[in-house]
Image 1 (cartoon, rainbow, N blue to C red):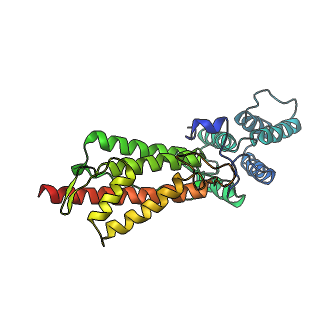
Image 2: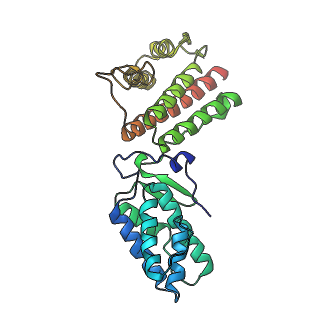
Length: 289
């Protein structure tokens, strides 16, 4: 069974950041070659097993001798290492296919491979059946959409946007991930428009107007404070000299968001979205009581 990961990685792996993402370093290639050698030592036909792993790394032609098979395997591994995600996939495929044929042998599992990847600061982790990028640092903050206060169409939009921002982070596209998350925050804010509260009806058409009106009608509350933080973050990310995700980036003073910064902002936004959805549910319930 092959590993699942974004199709774009087959052509362009995520860029290097806190971890090595683009290619497998030589030290790790040789370490995996030594692991393969130990696996092969469990059999009696070394040449045949070398050919098996050669095939896993994309070389189908048979070598003229056992020594050439070993040399050709190492060459195939170095070539495959140019794309880190594909290298891991090919390595896992080779181990899994051999495990099927030789169930009594010890074959390195996902935990074993993950330890070698982590030791060499390689930015991938196998979470069967998925290969995920470690660059994100952690899983995105989960957001549950409260059904009572949201129509199905609105919930579908929110859930689709949450999923898309996760995909963009995984694909190593930080600016687009933050842009998608910010769009979601603005979209959720519009759910308050026209909502009757104990302090009056929420007015405003656009994000800043809606937020300003909610704050004025809930002065001194946690909601007002949180909306203040949201406004500050929204302004920074929108500004050409800040995140530049809405109005373009100042070529001289703009900030290029990296993967870690994108994860921070996406998780902040997801937390704010979760809070706003719950507040919306509370206000809706109070209105309908």
